[in-house]
Amino acid sequence: MPDLQNVIELIYHDIIKHKNYGEVASYIPELAAVDSEKLGVCLTTVDGQVFHVGDWQDRFSIQSIVKVLLLSLAYNKLGGQLWQRVGVEPSGTAFNSLGTLENDEGIPRNPFSNAGAIVISDILIDLYEDPRQAMIDMIRSVSGDPSIYFDTKVAASEKAEGFRNVALANFIKSLGNINNGVDDVLNLYFDCCSIAVNCEQLAKVFLFFANNGQTPDMNNVLLNPSQTKRMNAIMLTCGFYDEAGDFAYKVGLPGKSGVGGGIVAVLPKHFSIAVWSPRLNEKGNSYRGLKFLEKFTTETKLSIF
Ligand code: DON
Image (cartoon, rainbow, N blue to C red; front, side, top):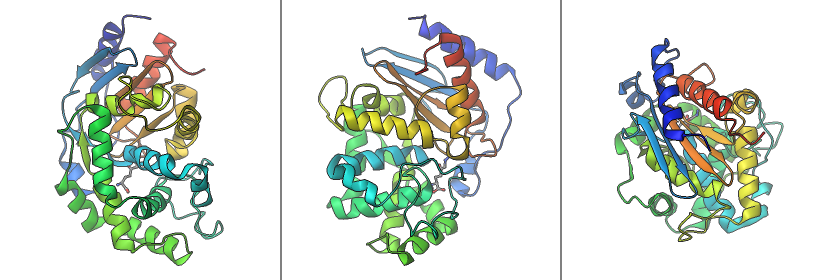
């Protein structure tokens, strides 16, 4: 193993020397208030080491990264039956696309598009008495950090402006793939997207994907090893929407991005790494986050390929 603290510090200093590109997400007004120049990183290993640099202690909005956790909660209870409601194919379309739903009878191509995560939210309402609480309990328990919270301002901001998701949910319901009320489904989805985490919390939450579905302290078993393999496969093929191929090509790790500027990635059996930098490229993925991870896996040769 290379000296990971030294590696992440060198890459961090190199990246902040170069010009930053992209725009902070503003279609959720509350997200536009963030300092666009922040860059934080935290890497946690399955054998208990933690490395960090930059603004790793700052909280940011988890946004689409939570889709992986929504799916885990549903998959854990339903198993393979879940795939009757949502597919596992990369969409090649933007995260908020309405594109293929009509031809596919309301079955989203994969669970990480907004359409897919909205269907998963509907499934969770049927599976859990209080799915919102189940989600925050899971995140707090897996990270070992009870301070993680819903950012109600971000959630309210998205509820006020989330017309595209309202359209998606209504469209899917009209095609028969949502059982519950559209407002209940969207409230759950928006609340989960609003969860505030820092890089260390996020890396720790995702460490079970590097550890066969359980936390390294063995206190939480979220998925079995086969399910974990499949979740990592979906992250690799669908985690970055129409930039998933580019991410696999340049970074070579399963991962997931969010419009809050976070990216989390996993090297199975070894580590999870969370990077946060708010400016997004035109595909909605963090510009510096992608740069950081590309340099990291290239320089350390730590990737799945
Ligand atoms: O539904 C939305 O549009 C947001 N709550 C999440 C989108 C997102 O994070 C896309 N990721 N890059």
